[in-house]
Every structure is written in structure tokens, then in C-alpha cells.
Amino acid sequence: MQTKFAELSDSQWQFIEKFFGCHRPKIHSMRTMLNAILWLTRTGTQWRNLESRYPKWESVYYYYRIWKASGLIDKVCAYLVESERKRLDAQAEPSIVAI
Image (cartoon, rainbow, N blue to C red; front, side, top):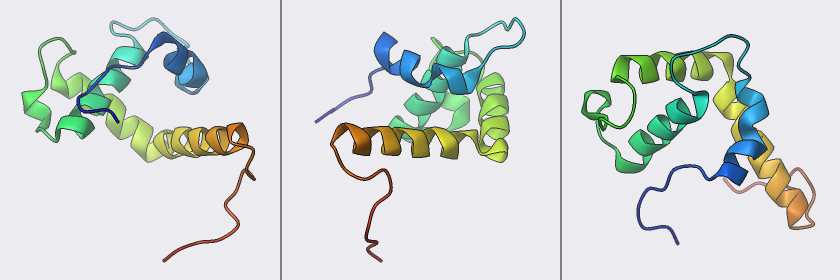
């Protein structure tokens, strides 16, 4: 069990990097932006209280809004769930639902 926040490892980032394709040069890497968003969700802090090791909160929030509106975050989550289920030798989609 993870007790505190840890940034994405190299292998974790390589697994999902294809979703965050960089078609043009950027000041900050998409990995850094994603780590900042994950840090925010893990700590539950406000955007304006983003740690100084990450880009300005406005920049991070900009990418969060784009990724959320385009459905990218949901696609990555679905991909991770499907990959983990396949790794565990289960069907890609769950066979039952609990409400």
C-alpha cells in the first residue's frame, strides 16, 4: 500500500506516454504536468497551492481542462484497467456490475 505520493516511474510513464503525444515542442513535459495533476489529486490541495517543483498552477490546470474535456483522462483510465485485467488473466471487460 502506498502511503504517500510518488511520481510516475519510467516504466509507468512509458506505458501511457502514447496518449500524451507531443506534436510540438513544449516548455514543460507532459509527464511533469501529469505528475502535478496526480499530486493534486493525491494530496487534495487547491490548485493555487501546487508545489514549486511543478509548473505554475495555471499551466497545469490548462492541460487538465483540455485532457478532461477531450476524454483523454477517461481513455487512459480505461486502458489501464483493461491492461491490468488482461495481466491478471481476466476478461478485458467485467462480467458483472455492482450498484
